[in-house]
Length: 101
Image (cartoon, rainbow, N blue to C red; front, side, top):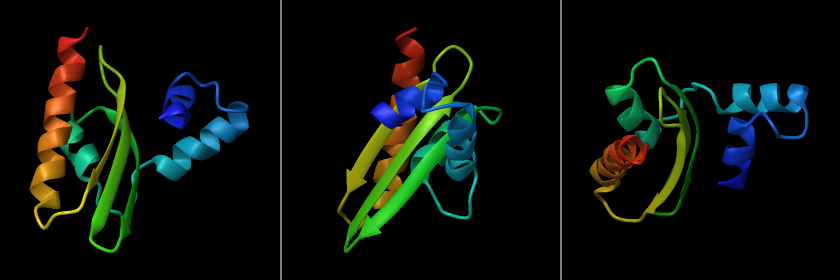
């Protein structure tokens, strides 16, 4: 999460490295449920993410930059319901981020 915080503040190494990280974490062919949950509510937001799997586990993380409430979230799921559970966590996190402002 520290990487996401520094990236969001443009304090990650230097401007060139920060731009490279932004490009690597930008939209990709990989399916990220947390990004989808945020963009469903805020289509114009920037969402930088990473996704990973290992055995039955799915890990999603995202840095969301949206009006009034930038936030980062990471979640790990190991059940057969990961799709719906991670989408639900993403929606709730987005609601909480807006309520905290």
